[in-house]
Amino acid sequence: MRSTMSIAVIAVFLLLASIQAAFPQTESNPSFKVMTLNIRNGTLDSDQNRWENRLPLVVEILERYEPEIIGWQEMLDFQRGAILDEIPEYESYGRGRDRGDVGEGCFIFYRPGRLEFQEGGTFWLSETPDDRGSIGWDAAVSRICTWVRFRDLETDRMFYFYNAHFDNEGIIARLESAKLVLERIEARTYPYPVILTGDFNSGEGSEPILLLDDSLVDTFDIVHTEDEDAGTYNGFAGAVNGEKIDYIYADSGFDVIDSEVIRDAIDGRYPSDHFPVLAEILIRP
Image 1 (cartoon, helix red, strand yellow):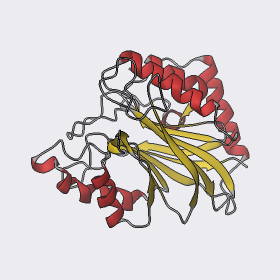
Image 2 (cartoon, helix red, strand yellow):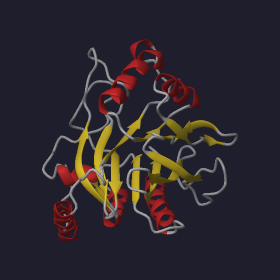
Image 3 (cartoon, one colour):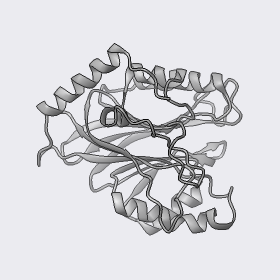
Image 4 (spheres, one colour):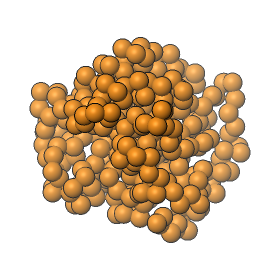
């Protein structure tokens, strides 16, 4: 069940709606598409959901929707390489969450024809965020957030992109991870606009999401204010009525043009046990 919107959140919706009217998309200020997807660790499944069978489905989704930037979660390096081999128009940034740059990563893909990499980094969602491989609070495993500062080649404007994966077991860890991510965003070097994507393992109305809602805007909620079936975890079965745990957030430096949970099945199968989430956004002048 979706959380009741506060007066403050409704005010943000109305403000962004007025901003959209004031700053429409133009040839000199085109929109771009952002996607987030928990790709599912490529070593965990057998039979029809093993990685070799899912790779063509992932590629088809990317070619169908053509996002300029993607935040991945649970991605292993061989999955990253396999997708880039199929779609070389993307470049990537990121690392594994474990010591030695191995393990699951929150990799960021981008199209260099539109976005220019400026700088980036990774921090750990723990009490010691600069300690590689550290495990925070009551988390089961190490978790990370990877970030990049981009220059949009079409508009010559800068923005930050953060991509995180919160723990699936640690209740305290999820809340503290949200706090840490917001602290790092607040402490960024330049006051450029911010996008945050991720699998936060937290449904709407949970403490971590309410905390993020206080500082950023959920792009899906901007477009689908009354959608009750917004579940993003499908378990390879296409379920739509679960909780929304995958998000694309943006701050007031962006206008939200459109957003959707992509539930496309290809030959009755899905590219991951999560649905991709897509948003079309516009950098404000």
